[in-house]
Image 1 (cartoon, one colour):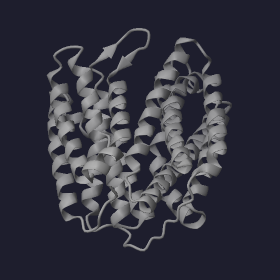
Image 2 (cartoon, one colour):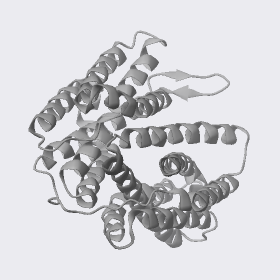
Image 3 (cartoon, helix red, strand yellow):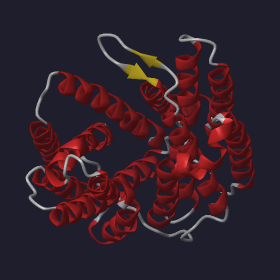
Length: 368
């Protein structure tokens, strides 16, 4: 039990840190770009985004290291490395050094993401219960808390350097303090590297990532009060709640019914969102869609681990899903003139059909 809680804390921390550190981009822009130079500002922004865009390169590295040292050692080492690089980035004095720091941060975070998911898949194999949706629910919750907390710190005019350093310090202390509590599961790769329906699982992960990214870019709902909220916050809340409850639903109704319910909620949320009839309709659409999407990606990881080599199959599906979250809006920029409605209506049928085909062709039981 303590191992599962510690692993959940790692997911929560990863979500919070991953959301909050990007708010420091303006600090790097003011440090390395001239105030009147748009080109230099864009260059700095692209360098900072390396810390996100190159994370998929760290995923196979993390899987390879996990095969040699174990997933727990990789999770702890990469979390500490990411914290050290993040704290050091606050004091870099040149754009070249910042670029190296961002590459190192991306590799460390990619390895950490894979190691955490491998530990969760190992727990599923040991316990026979679905753990990954719960972990990803905490990941979404951490991202939501990190975003709201950072917004409050910005409103309080806390210097960006201080925010970045304290983010790094907290992540380092938490990662080191929880290290001994993480589960030490064995991941024997006795199955084929990829499940026979790998393309379907990868397609589900990609579509779920694309859908979430497109929705985050549609900030049609905003609430300005004591705390400023928008559609991204509502989506994150739905994904957090859905992920935290996903394992309980699967334990009572089965994974198949969990996925069917998720597909139905996704469709309902998108239709609701498209109505955009007012301030009460749009946030509800975001929340319902978040509930529906919350378990699709983690269950795809779980099925990949159940039907193939845990390290290789989880890494491949995770990398593809992550790329979907990076490229969702870019993939559909051509239909921007038609609004996002066309995109949503195309994504949902693919998601539903892909899940159905994956389950119907499955040859091995998935965790309950």
